[in-house]
Image 1 (tube, rainbow, N blue to C red):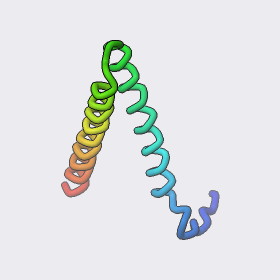
Image 2 (image 1 turned 90 degrees about the horizontal axis):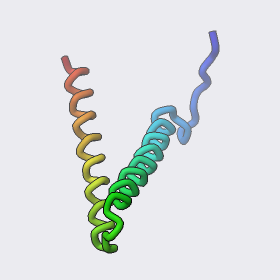
Image 3 (image 1 turned 135 degrees about the vertical axis):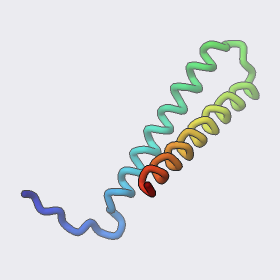
Image 4 (image 1 turned 45 degrees about the vertical axis):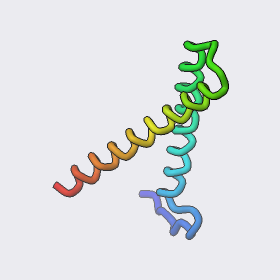
Length: 76
């Protein structure tokens, strides 16, 4: 059985997991927005910004929904 040492105040597993999840979300936003912009090649700069904002908002709504479901499952 392996020992788990005391993670220092700056290195808690939850914080590292959060950084990894944020990185995955950034990559997901990039690929989704790039795909949508690729479908619509004549999009202006303003339209591209709107697409990226819409993708980010969609991911935020999905994350909040997932958190609500997880908390609901934990509470019984």
